[in-house]
Image 1 (cartoon, one colour):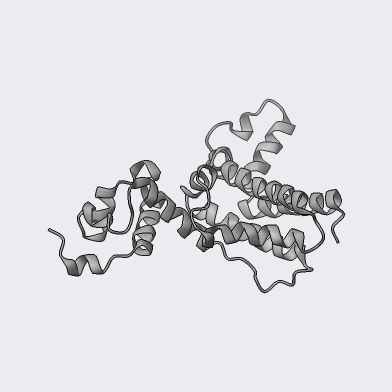
Image 2: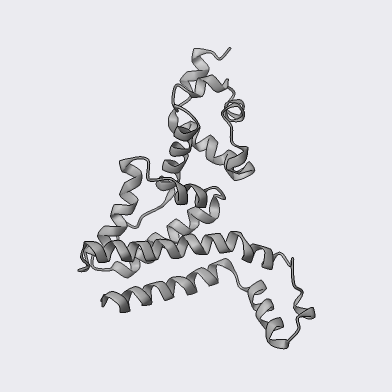
Length: 211
């Protein structure tokens, strides 16, 4: 039986941290209250003092992910480009760093006001340079969609291409196709993200006449 002393070492934050570490290793499908309890040295029932059920546990993990996004609060309100670039890079780092993050961000709403602050901060950066409510919402959606899509591609098809699986450039039907395959295999995640981020910033500046 779990002792009171063991339980006192637990907290919702500690449980969320351990659950996130577990999903990094075995994915969301491998996460269970029993396995999580064992990793923390307690019985699964002890976890229910801090999380109501599996859904609540996933909310706690998602909140932990939101808190990992390092927002550049020190950037002046007038400098929307630097703020958005840094904010999107921070979001990208969390998505790439945690395999379960993409699914959790895609399928679950922000579970707390602290997590929702990430979204309102980003929305506010666009509003601060003159976009109205609808425009700021559209701009944020466009920027976030780029990062989510980029992460899905990098962790999916591009990861397969860079691993050398699939078509061999030396066996490609044409020289152009061979060159394209080699370029995709050689390009780094950082290079491709920065290129896409530049396109996002240029598109936002042109579409909304931003400074």
